[in-house]
Length: 288
Ligand SMILES: O=C(O)CCC(=O)C(=O)O
Image 1 (spheres, helix red, strand yellow):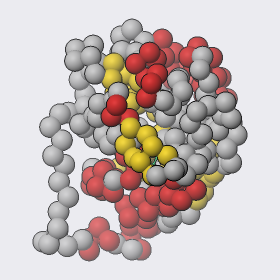
Image 2: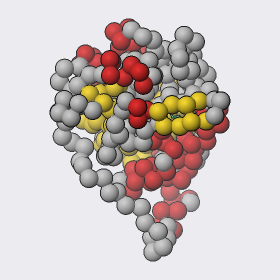
Image 3: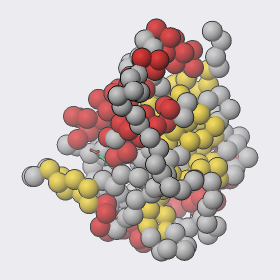
């Protein structure tokens, strides 16, 4: 077996209220990750604004007139890397709706993917946390698969990780690496963040990365942090605490092949008694 290995970096950055400062910090950390050999880098969810439904509209931008997208494009091109652009509040120029969107850039700086969060984070855990993204956001309707040359990568945003069907569809599309920019909190983070990553990784025999903002004591939303990467075997192969940091992992695709040949669940699935079907109506390669 001689599959390629490539270096991934996850940027656990501190996010504040100043959009320009957030963009500047993101670019500085991506430059550092690239200088350290990363060929694919991911930012966290909502990296250019506070994570709060009340401000998404104010911070939102559209493709074609976006200082954030322009800066990421330039940064991907300068460093010649694949860049999973965390997410930003995106306003659609045609329907005016706001989405929680991850733009993805190739090493030439072109936008090659746009993942609009499919599952909105609407939860209410009494006396702990209530959050309703649907108060201001609309859900996306399509899967996002990017071929980075080494392998195909499937992208989800935060709450999307709770839905095993999405990860299963990505595995069915032969993705070997799933990346979830996310921002779990102090209630669900300790309970479910690592568990969900390990579950998605073992079920689908893929690498899984989940990349969080650093915890900002001044923020109304306290992010759990603990950005991590999990191997197809279910081991946490990179992680950190809650401060600003960059995590690095060598993604070794031999591990995917080994796992798939030693425990061949894919050949053993009982498609005669169950099926998982991609019913998304839109393709994800036209953007406006
Ligand atoms: O699923 C969770 O517990 C947290 C999800 C979340 O914070 C998000 O979708 O932004």
